[in-house]
Length: 162
Image (cartoon, rainbow, N blue to C red; front, side, top):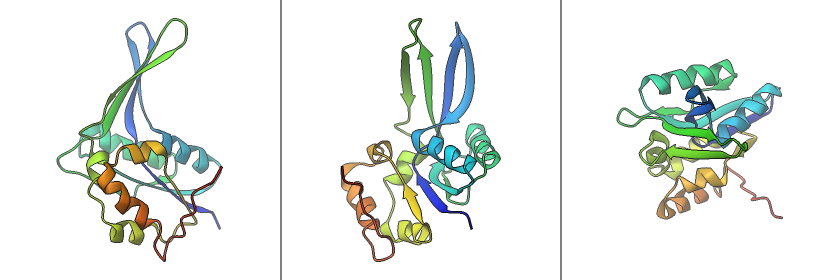
């Protein structure tokens, strides 16, 4: 049986400057990239996020499914869209990032969660992964809800100590 993992976060449209004014479009984000890597190692991965109904959001779902990442936990927001970032490379190889995510579907979603919803969706997973970047999407007053969801009787949350 495959190990069941749920990755929680935001995937965005990624636009990469390949050379001069030539760009390549893909999808990425720390938690999504983690999901891709684990999927390729034969883990069962579900991704909890929110996207819009726009063309880029729909193509993200297809992209995720091609990587064997389940879309069953992807929330569709009728009024918001998927976030976007552009990566420009300098001649010395240093990268500069430009983000458009303040009004993304994922940011709205994570700031309107209730703990019962999170518990109901995540209690069946062996592992749940989220990052500091996931937490940065959530306003301080809502982080308590997110955190307490993981301290329920159903989810045994043990932060890794250093």
